[in-house]
Image (cartoon, rainbow, N blue to C red; front, side, top):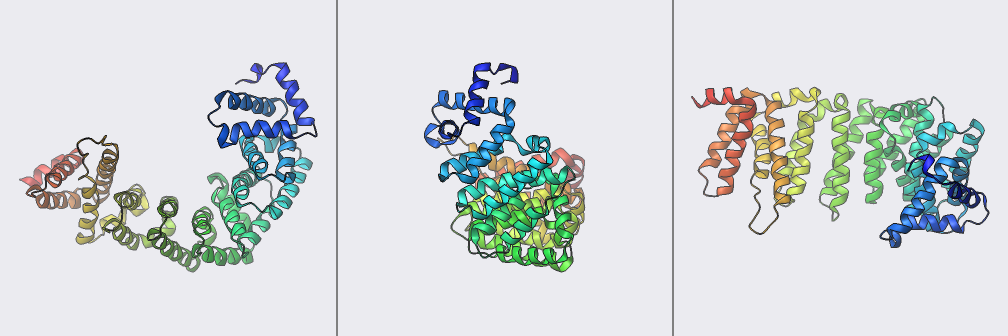
Length: 416
């Protein structure tokens, strides 16, 4: 909805509600937007969203004041949660630079004071995104907020799991463009780097899975702080131990989240990880070859290999891999090509696995180059073509069709 579309009557009503000491109307409106019991009441939700948009466009200062007031002072968990969501809806990168320096200073102080006493982990998780955005826009607009960084360092170093998870989530949720700036500001104090290194090392081994997974993202976000070889080695080892611990845990979602952060690290920091890639390939194979794990887990593990093939700095890894390791890598996407829908199934899951296998095979073959990929493909094909199981024969034929797209001349030469 454009600004001009908001009627004057709605603008006036918004002003009255935002400037009133009675918080009930706005609490009710926010519950219409965010509370689960109202999610299917489209008319109520539509009107409430229109009101919020009107407030945002015509009375942003009043709305900001009201939301921070509700976040800081309301005793109801639902109200604080909704206020945090609405503040995120306002988009800090848009409203923060428009505030006067004195207003920014007051809000910063009030915000940190509030966070120090917030007891709800649910609300802290919501506000972690908000603080990350405000911290980001502060540093990308050439300002500083050392109090917030000191606050987060003290939280990550505490013995309270809520505090440690919150601080980790803030660092994890920093937008890419501000991560280097925040890392540089933290790195100006050597003591801070040592505290963070020790704290993250502890969090990565935490028995609290939420703390552990949040710290994965935080380490990836601030990894350049720990580029000193010994520090980085310690944290990477802790990450890999944590991945395998989560892999064999009862909650698969924790492993998926942690492994996704590992994939981010591999793609974003190739120079730091370059010397560890051979070992990482073997670790991935250990996951991808395990019969006790699901095919979805195999696919996720192989996705890390696919990411490696897309990063130029890792080219040497595949070129120098021994024949046995390359063959093992080839067999991972081959297993994925065996998936065919049974009669009576929609086949969506099987098709997704097969497509992932074809993509992985194509990327892997390209990274290996024709001289390695073609003879190996022919070798693997011969192992499949005479198999009694038709799915294996089909997988072998599919593999050749994938390779022909890039290496048709080489494959003709090899067959001769």
